[in-house]
Amino acid sequence: MSHKITALTVRDVRFPTSVEQHGSDAMHTDPDYSAAYVVIHTACGLKGFGFTFTLGKGTQIVVCAVEAVATLVVGKSLQEIVSDFRGFYRLLTSDGQMRWLGPEKGVIQLAVAAVLNAVWDLWARAEGKPLWKLLVDMDPRQLASCIDFRYITDALTEEEAVDMIVKAQEGKQQREDQMLKEGYPAYTTSCAWLGYPDQLLRQLCTDALKSGWTRFKVKVGGDLEDDVRRCRLIRQMIGPENTLMIDANQRWGVAEAISWVSRLAEFKPLWIEEPTSPDDILGHAAISKALAPLGIGVATGEQCHSRVMFKQFLQASALQFVQIDGCRVGSVNENLAVLLMAHKFQVPVCPHAGGVGLCELVQHLILFDYISVSGSLSNRMCEYVDHLHEHFTSPVVIRDAHYMPPKDPGFSCEMLESSVQRHQYPEGEVWKLNISK
Ligand SMILES: C[C@H](O)[C@@H](O)[C@@H](O)[C@H](O)C(=O)O
Ligand SMILES: [Mg+2]
Image (cartoon, rainbow, N blue to C red):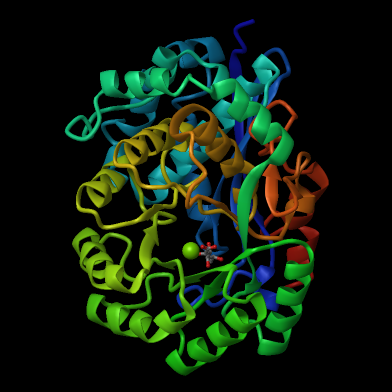
């Protein structure tokens, strides 16, 4: 079946998470987790669902960008798209007029991510497989053919990519069986958002320990003395054996990052995440170098907007943990490039998740990474945040602090229609009641 695409719809869906400070950090003090939510309709009735993640205001701008990109999609068939996926990615990202808005960054790339996520969802549904399995079963050449290698061949060529995937075929079946049995290791960020009072932090940390969590991320960067107190509290609660990470969400300049994190070194964080501007590659390199003797790595990627940026971070040894995101770069196509480059540079990938639906999406990519690319779990874990899963038709399944591989066909992007309607901005019931927003 060719699955001709007859329409693409996009809606502005927002959840009022800021009310209780869920998701708050040093730079985003009042995030309303939101999505530009896309549905692709086909002539045969099959649908593809996708989205990109936003923080509330501004979602309407992404919706406009999706509408602009949609003109390049409607009328094509799924077959046509996936038989030349690299060409289709180029079509979306290289339109002679629209690329001026990016290129391959900002609002236009978020829109491309939403649309391509829906196309991948449609493809996986058409094949009757969860997305991770579609990728795992795909021929290495076909996988590589989805990637646009423009601007990255100085770090990774198509031939090298194919060779790497071919090499990783060994042991693939065992790794898939292992994932189906044990799942992929996760860490939690749910205990320590910046806006949470200490009492709540204590409560959530106690609950998380009881549920088997062993890796915890704490938001820092607001006030140094608060950070010292909060990190001490968490470290005391989790003990010396469990893992602690800290996340500053771009709060500091380079020198300030080094001195602030040095002050928190006594709590033995594994990494400092986004210490400075997400675009400052050499700044991250300087911070990495300064913190290495303290045993603290630098993690970044949730606002790293393209494979070209990731390439440079890797080339400059500017990060020790690659944090891919399911919605920031150009969907699976661009993330495949990032996973392969990270493998070549031997830097572990620890995906960013949380928000609304980011866990649902990125679990597919990290499962693929383990089974078909890296074959390693060393120093690796996927972020987990315990919010808003109830709005999805195939929510993530966490068992003993591990992501259990999704079984339903698709990319786990579909939201319950009732949730979309209630949270649509500004006409949904939730927002009508919340006029002050
Ligand atoms: C505004 C958001 O909640 C961010 O704070 C969040 O994505 C965070 O950076 C994370 O790593 O989970
Ligand atoms: Mg972060």
